[in-house]
Image (cartoon, rainbow, N blue to C red; front, side):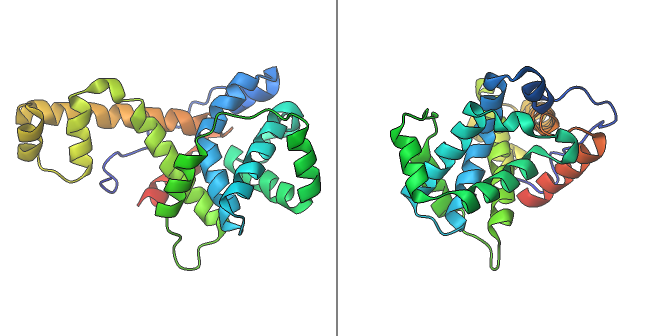
Length: 231
């Protein structure tokens, strides 16, 4: 991604009810699962960085997230006390401290629900996401969150072909002449497509971040951290 090119931000003054608020207010498991879509891989990376092997980490993440949905633990959280990502990180840290292998095995054998999570893909991405020197599990979770958020938002543009291909080439620092040659668009059409998709991607990312914070201040800080983490 070109540094700073997406200009992620925009107007953060108005603030509507967030998806996290809706989860808590309505005990809406479907909304909770929508939030999990972006956060499960960062949590998996976090657990792996804590020293657990692949299979154990998979069990831990499944058990942790299923517990949030089944026991209603998420509904005891207070959004006013921090961002959703911070809540999940703290909850997982506490879960790891309290967890025993015997207890977790009993819960799995007792028929705990299995979430549809692509751990094979998650493990492959974990192997590629090499930790920086001295990087903590918490820092890796944040970096993985930013990457998951970026990729999930970019995937929503999948119906924009061939304009999406032009945008992907732009993100790889291809010039407009090269973009036009590879996509069949004119240079002017390529510029218009890139400009439009930059704006659409920015809106998608801000909308997703807005779902997991409760104040304009938190939104502004989360956007700033997202941009920094992507570099």
